[in-house]
Length: 185
Image 1: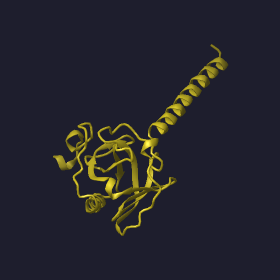
Image 2: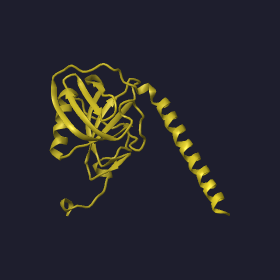
Image 3: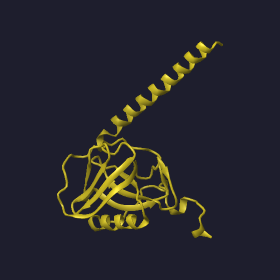
Image 4: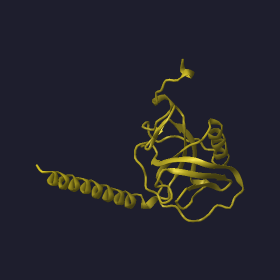
């Protein structure tokens, strides 16, 4: 096989893979269109504001490896998260802000991993909420410190006192993640 034929073969393979990826992302966008949130802003008093938080992903409750393509929450990046009396605002850099009404917020939890990131035990904060179509979903964040993560959980607890109960045993929790550290010794 000549170098030219080899190059053409690899170009065909690469373009096929890229085409498949684009079609799959488009199908995911159509599938998750029912979860699109209303554009209404929140006007309640600020309970707690967190700047420059690592937004990881939004997944269906109990399916930590299945990313949802919700407008405003599609891509991993830095976010400003504001907990208000009437809900939670998530503003991922480069995306339009997402406003979750307090009535749709189910609570918080923690995990060691989600699609896009695996960290130490309880290193990710989960925000459980319900989409407009009734599906339970979880948005995950990586805070700079454990203290920030606890303040986030306390602030969400003020507006959504109901307990966060994962709908499936597939959710990564403390008992399912393993790591070795000096704390465990």
